[in-house]
Every structure is written in structure tokens, then in C-alpha cells.
Image (cartoon, rainbow, N blue to C red):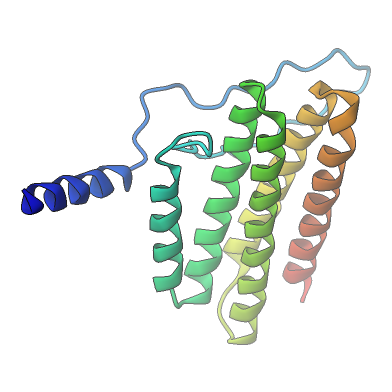
Length: 185
């Protein structure tokens, strides 16, 4: 019986390690008509997988923390952190669309924390003499996408949440400036 439980748990963890989706990817928000068209960022957010409102979400957290801990190369760690930031941002968008605004804000805040870690790892890689141009370009594009999504969420949210989305948007703007500064050095 114990062997069956261990095998079932192992199979469950194995299956949760794949992000397979049969749903359509995140569809861009309908834009309001404005005299000045807002340029769309050509950057796709990855499918978030399990959302924080899922009871099995803790397994994903364990998997991601373990995978992140095992990465020692700063560039690979930066790419991993950027992927986590993008997934969490998209998870926040999904949660917002489900009406779970507080959980969406918390998830988006964690996304921006991952983004900050990614920038830190790129700085570390630069100090080690590694080539960082490709990852900084990705960071700039991703930060623009974060700003685009956060602007859309801020416009759609109730007044009590507008300020919180605005603060996260300001963080994303600061990250873009940091990433641009990395390319200039």
C-alpha cells in the first residue's frame, strides 16, 4: 500500500511539472477608442499553469522553488526568474478576470519580485563578464508587456484597487529603466 501511495504521489508531481494547456493563450484586452493609438508589445506571456486559487498550487511552488535553488548559472537563473515573473503576471490577469482581485494583486506583486531578482542576476552575470545583451532585450520587452497588462488592469479595476495596480506599474517602469541602463554599460 505504501509503495502505491509513493508511486501515485511521484506520478502526480511528474505530471504537474509539465505546463500543458489546451486552452487558448491570453487574449489581449479590448482597447478603448483613443485619439492616440497605444502600440502593442510583441511579447507573449506564457500560460500560467496552476493558479494560486487551486488547492494543488503548493506542489507547483515546491517544484519551482526546488528548480530555482538548483540553478547556479546567473544567466539561467535570470531567465528562470523572468519566466516565473511572466507566469505570475499572467496568473494575476487570469485571477483578475475570475473576480479575485486581491489574490490577483498579491500574485502580481510576487511577479514583480521575481522580475527584480532577474535583474539582480543579470547584474551579477555582467560582473562575471558574461554576455547579457540577449537577456536584457528580453527584460525590456517583458517589462513593457508587464506595463501594458498592468495599465489594462488598472483601467478595468475599481477605484479602490487602481492605486495598487498603479504602484505595480511604476515598479515595472523602473525595471525597464534598469534593464535599459544595463544595455548602455
